Amino acid sequence: MENKPIARTLRFLSQLMELHEVNPFKIKSIANAAFKVDKLPFPIAGKSLTELEKIDGIGKSIAAKIVELLENGTMVELQDLLAQTPEGIVEMMGIKGIGPKKVAIIWKELGIENVGELYYACNENRLVEAKGFGLKTQEEIKRLIEFRMAGNGKFLYSQVEQEVKGLMEEIRGIFPDALKHVAGEFRRLNEIISELVIVVGSINQEIAYQSLSQLDTLRNVVLSGTHINAELRNGLLVDIICVDKADYYYELFVNTGTTDHVEEVLSRINIPLEQPETEELIYQKAGLAWMQPELREDKNFIQEAAENKLPTLISYHDLKGTLHNHSTWSDGVNTLEEIALYCRDELKLQYLGICDHSKSAFYAKGLSIERVLQQQEEIDHLNKKITGFHIFKGIESDILNDGALDYPDEILNKFDFIVASVHSNIKMQQDKATARLIKAIENPYTTILGHPTGRLLLSRKGYDIDYKKVIDACAANNVIIEINANPVRLDLDWRWHQYALQKGVMLSINPDAHRNSGFHDMHYGVNVARKGGLTKEMCLNALALEEITQVFEKKKAGK
Image (tube, rainbow, N blue to C red):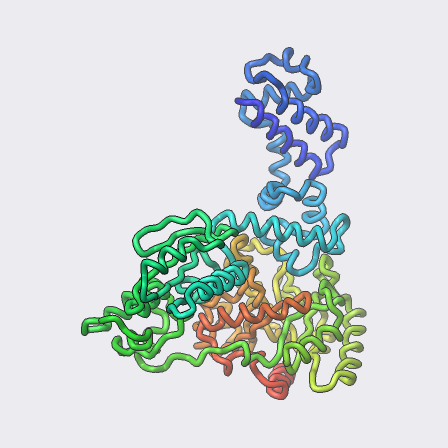
């Protein structure tokens, strides 16, 4: 074994010891030994214990550890510490720039156990007030995690949105008269993007090909037939397809839908398809209504298109209010008044549902009963003060291990609506996790089931649940299901929207905003709601103020 792996292992041991607050002198001696070993001008493999003990900076104790490592490939002390450390914490320690002391605070004080939860906590602004942290440190950690996430070749839609727009603007600047459009996953509004596909149709295909291959924003360009394969600066793979203008719409169609979708549509065309002038014409020849790009996943909605019964998809402008948001009363950045005025004046919304964290969420300054009453007094005051707008009294009530909500009924009854969410013990078996959610759904005070699986895209898959049983329970108990619009969550998954809608369950596009800029995440919630076929009629926060007031009052009266 070379010196560097030995030094690296010793350094990792010292970091784990620091994480678990072992004797500081011992930590320092092992860290110093790691440095010394790394700089030695000779290999230490093959040295006897006596020879190792005589090397400056090593000594008897550390020499024994090195011999153990060389003979066994590991050390008992290292394995003991690893057994006490969640796998996600070990992964977190591998992120350059986050040392053991910061990881210890993140883990032991904030209750965060993996990189995905840490990234989400940065979005929620939870690191700012932790000891040794601040806004600058939080943003740097977020940047480091995003860089790490990009390393696996997959990106959140929100992470690449601006880069895609910038590249398209560059292409438009070069070829203002050419036909050009994003295709593939991005055009289908997929929540995760692994490749950006762009189709360009030009009269002079060769000139377009050569000019596009020299774009400043592209890296590692490879030319292959009509394809320009490259990467953006952030590592996102790009495939620009240059075709003759006459072939443009066919190529755009073929490169937008999934393989199954494209094959299903083309199989329905019995006559030769020659250079269609629009995508609509392709669907028309297949005997189908034109399908929005976001619906072109596999064979979804094909039957509805054949019967001309495609849903009129919800749009961002259909939203009349915003529910499930956090203020400075818990872990938000803005005051209630700042949020209300922003929603009214900037977003032109009619209402706000404030849902600060409940008392069990101690890590997020969850509201005690006394503070709930104080907040509701402020809401009453603001509703009198702010005209043309209404603040609903809500709470994000933690679902406890047994499915109970974490306030007594007399307090739950004081809210206009309640979002019930799981934030702890997310490693339950499917049957227990399902039963836990169903019990919360059956609570007569639950209005909305928040982020049903707790997933964090690209980092935590969320807890296993029986989707059908959970959705059926919501249907039976008149409970709305949240589409958490935070681009890291987007939970409920769009693949289950149709089942919910067919059962008569309304969905609610909630930003889970922790600062005013977070309200714009509703844009991403609308994206996946459209993929799931949501209409404005079945979206809770597309209801006008008077209508949603009646929904909340009816729910409370039904208890």
